[in-house]
Image (tube, rainbow, N blue to C red; front, side, top):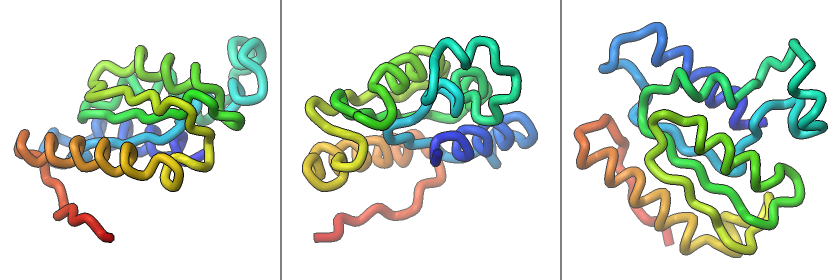
Amino acid sequence: LGSGPTIHLAAHLCQKYPADRWPAGVALQSPILSAVAVVSEGLSRIFPGDMFCNRHKIKRVKCPVLIMHGTNDSVVPFCHGKVLSQCCPNLWMFSAIAGADHNNIEHQFADRFIATLREFLQGLDEAGCRVPSFKHVA
């Protein structure tokens, strides 16, 4: 449920503070549309108590957003990442990682994963965002 608290916090910071205090960017890996939608898409349309309704909160995130999702995700369906990217007004990139499951992106697809993160961080840096140093660890 990492995407729920991440989007919640980013949306809060972007609403409450001036732009110089927003996150430089948000990177999401295999995000959920909502906590309830992971269980049942139909239920998420009628259940009012979903505290991590990312599909609505992402609209308030004003900093660049990277979304990566494996096409063979067996935990959070791929469509969650795809639909969330379509709801995101500040999407930097949606990266569909062909063949990746929920728990193997960093290992079996490490080259693509790291290259995408590096490109995102370099893009933020070039845009003048506050980005910590990103060094490749071998």
